[in-house]
Length: 173
Image 1 (cartoon, helix red, strand yellow):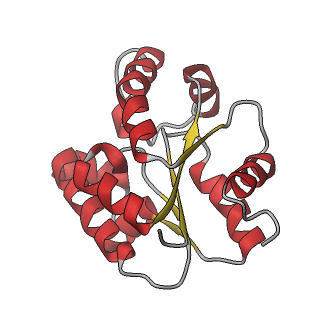
Image 2 (tube, one colour):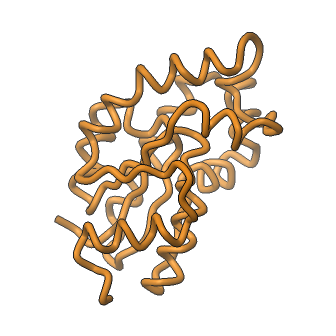
Image 3 (cartoon, one colour):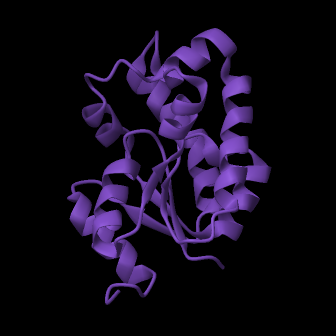
């Protein structure tokens, strides 16, 4: 297994925020796949969904992941919430390193994303119901893709990072 630490989970789970904490602690670069896709496309994720559709976004997501899989120096990777949905991505993620599922409850997501209007999959309709439905659908996929799972509700990012490092036996690193 590689030395990368890959954070997966639902939107609002804290992947990027926890990734920053891990990056500081381990002195490793943090790579955010959504930010990489935005830089590559020259537009936001929501704009990509709007103009090119979700299928095109998911293809680009897999291409970015394939490029990350070639990296030799260990990094922290914060993935988009849908990254593990494709079987090929789940395989690549698990081969790249330690896959950590940041588990979050629907109520926490609702609170964290209350004022966030940039999430394409939450536009229109009952936001809370969309979050519950997507989490119910994706939870088992995240569990299957991960080597370990960490609950993030009511925890600070540094607490979550420490829990991850202990689980990976890297807390002394």
